[in-house]
Amino acid sequence: MPQGEKNIFHRRLGEVNMTKMIGSLLVFLALVSSAAAVHSPDRAFDEFGDIKCEDEMARLDSFALQLQNEPNAKGLIVVYGGRLFRGRLPKQGEADARAARLKLYLVERRGIPKDQIMVVNWGYVEQWMVQLWMIPHGATIPDRLPTTIPPDQIKFGKGKVNPRDYRCGI
Image (cartoon, one colour):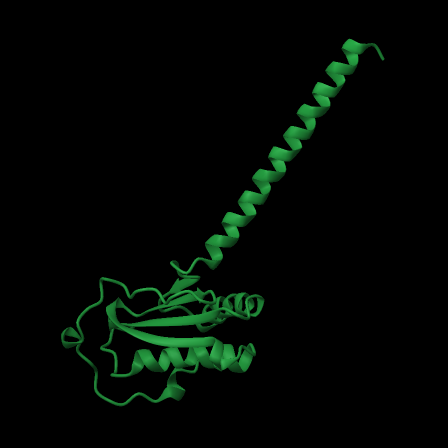
């Protein structure tokens, strides 16, 4: 091969290698950033309100998989009671009973160690809501929503909460 053709060949080979290297770097950065988004302590893994039991269990299954993939992380279940639930006043302690159902499902049905899951009740918002957070080892727990409603502005329905009423077929 003549000298001029060798230089062109080596230059093109270098361009191809550089293109592959840049492409590999971009793929790597995309993977790292998407992994960081899932593991970031400042965002919820999932959030939902009043949904069907089957949908709730599907979301919890996804959360359980993530907890199994990260055994050093903690799962945080944050529950917010609502002013109304399905058109009626909530009973006092209803939000806690619903949160207990979520932890029960993760521990008994999905085998997540109970000490890997924390449950907190962060007050009231307009509609009952749950947030599922992945808290990496050493990270701090996120802050509650700034839009919480003071408890003295919540009216409760009569009657006591029976935790079995909130088991969702578990």
